[in-house]
Figure 1 (tube, rainbow, N blue to C red):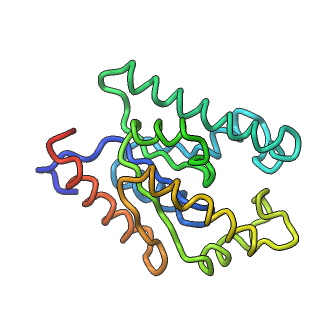
Figure 2 (cartoon, one colour; figure 1 turned 180 degrees about the horizontal axis):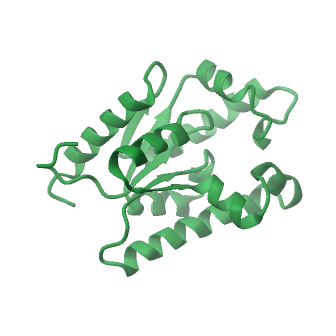
Length: 188
């Protein structure tokens, strides 16, 4: 890290399932030493069950409400504490579905939309049985439909859009950090 430039404050990672949010979040955490908040993991820990179980028992709306509650908590911490801890926030793929969430994300920090082509997403998610939105007769059609719905919402929320296909977490983290420093130079 270049010590002459201050590191960015919170970095918020958004994107479709399988786009690399968790992997890139861990890489940024290692480089910056910021706390890593993986929203899905926090929600699972608080609920005492997996996201798939939350969807099955309480429904998707309950899960989405939990996402909003967590974003609001994080925002309150930022507003309360002048020197609030800096974080890497890795979100769930559907967090941008709620307008309130998109607003909170942009207020929390530098929002990076990690995206990948359909084939890459299918390859990365196809082996994972813990993805409740893919429990369908035609997961390809489901992913296509969700991508079509979410792409404009990701674009609305993001400061930066990054294609993760063909890049490793190290390369992605380098690009994100350089872009964040440039974007917010003098503002943080």
